[in-house]
Length: 156
Image (cartoon, rainbow, N blue to C red; front, side):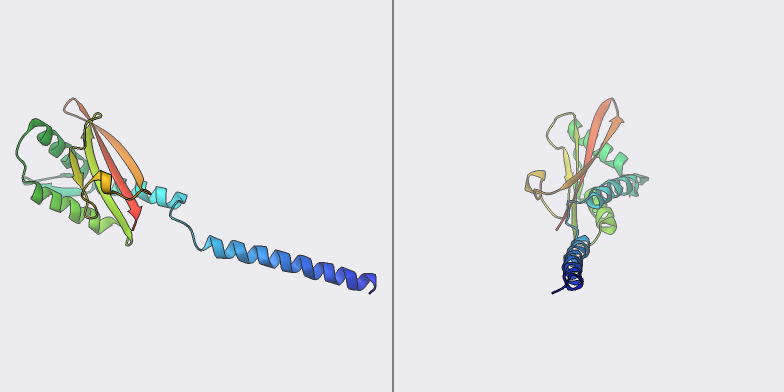
């Protein structure tokens, strides 16, 4: 075999290696895993949108974040609440906005207290959520209290 034949063989081997690498990159780029930056950004965007969504409660239309603050303060005060009506509206709002194949929950608490308000169509409590969740927190100063609202999203 002369040097021209050897050069052609080396070129063919290098071409095959590059083709294999390029194929691997193309195949893995299309199969993004749920831990990427876009899932985190989606969680942030979902939290911003759902907490600013206006819902009607007690003949008054307010952003959902403020309604959760109201409900948290009423719960802390010991007032009896008709949870079904406003929780149903929160659930309807979240379900209308969430992407197909994703789950969500909203938790509201003051300070380091136990969760006072927890709403989710997917799980019954924060201890029952999947291990791999994205959380977006907002702090509201409300009636002298700092109310922390956390919006969770995850892939079902």
